[in-house]
Amino acid sequence: MKKLKFPSAQTILLIIAGLVAILTFIVPAGKYDTLVYDNASDMFIRTSQENTETLAATQETLESLNVIIPLEKFTSGDIYKAINIPNTYKELDAKPQGLVAFLKSPIKGIIDAADIIFLVLIIGGLIGIMNHTGAFDAGIGWLAKALYGGEYYLIIIVTVLVALGGTTFGFAEETIAFFPILIPVFLAAKYDALVAIACIFLGSSIGTMCSTINPFSTIIASDAAGINWTTGWQGRLAMLLMTLLISLVFIMRYASRVKKDPTKSIIYSQKDQIEALFHQGTVTVTKFNWRLRLALLTFSACFVIMIIGVSLLDWWFLEMTTTFLVGAILIGFITKIKEGDFIEVFVKGAGDLLGVALIIGIARGVTVIMSDGLISDTMLYYASDITTGMNKGLFASVLTLTYSGLSFFIPSSSGMAVLTMPIMAPLADTVGVGRELIVNAYQYGMGLLYLISPTGLILPSLAIAKVGYDKWLKFILPLFIILVLFTLLVMTTSAYLY
Image 1 (cartoon, helix red, strand yellow):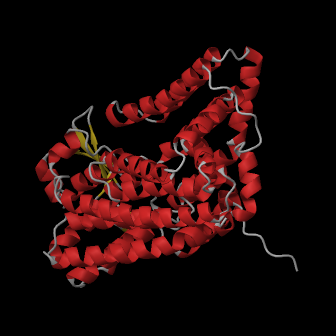
Image 2: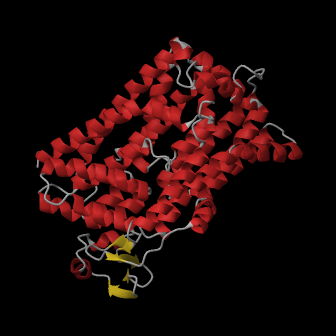
Image 3: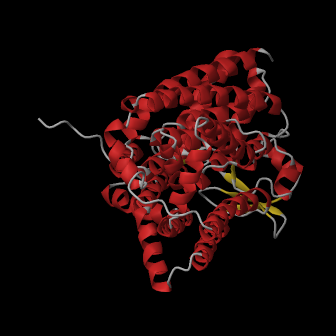
């Protein structure tokens, strides 16, 4: 018999979508009532399955609904999404998602994820233009010489910088842009593609897992829990430093083995294929003239502008995508690419990342099935009952693991915060711990599963280098186990300190 091949990313996601569709036949459908603040009318809007009603936007209204959140968190715009109202869960008529819904889910997911998909395609076009000019090859050749003998600094610098982006403003989807750029740099430094993927993906994941001032997780979750976001920030900062150190040691040990003996690479069988994919050792390096230097400077400026825009100017996918499109056009002018050649190269570059874009859309389709099948709130309802009657330490550990499980069904960090915090935060009061412990359990639980979750960004990231999910699991599982055990120890200890 031929050796069975591990399924592709697309197949894995379709299998998961099928399993989730089956769950909608088994798990009872249900939903919480929701509450959202309408700025235009200065009123709350409460929505249930039966009706929609407007309520006075007052603290008394919130208290009557057992929503222990200051009114100003809504009126200031800190909480702008609909939140679940505690003690309002109701079972509904089942909405099982059959074969037709399953077949439609990838298409719905692609439509729903159109913003990030277009970002990926435009970045692909930009990368195609850069490769056509030879600027990448010239720049990488220069960088390889500059880093000679100190390549390990590359691991530290990239991982730490990406982690800083993660902990401050939730640097996640934006990292997709960095993989095609940095993988060739790591290959030139005699590492394998897994080292590059680990530095970028793990840096982002650890940063967002231990968010300190991230408005999309820490701040919105703290607001929804009814506490100031600064409560407990010292513990999250300490957790960031410790988990980042553990991850860096893990990556550098693997990288050192690969550098000394390339056959130790988990993806050694793909070495020639990946090097050819990123033009390593197969092209003549172009002279690094002033045009190519200016092209690289423009290219780098796109990322700097993107980061400034997202962190300071309230930018999102539309503005980020526009930035990269303008960058590609400017680089075309700088390097004097003919109009016809520009279009051809740009479209081909976008096509090279089409597979990555489709993976993102299919993953979003899994979420669509859960939402349409009305099982997400049911999972939350039963999850909130699991911790009843537990002591402090066990409560903290189980809640962290519960959030890991919930993150499969509610992958959005901001969505998880506003949907779960009004339900979960009061549990802290009954156990006798601070509500910041609930915020930490939410962040750490989501962050841990994110390292291996196929519905997150790891499959699109791996697809850029044509690396299989099974290879990633072989690489990451030892670190994953270490981080899980360490996190549970920290959470248990923190709970007993109250």
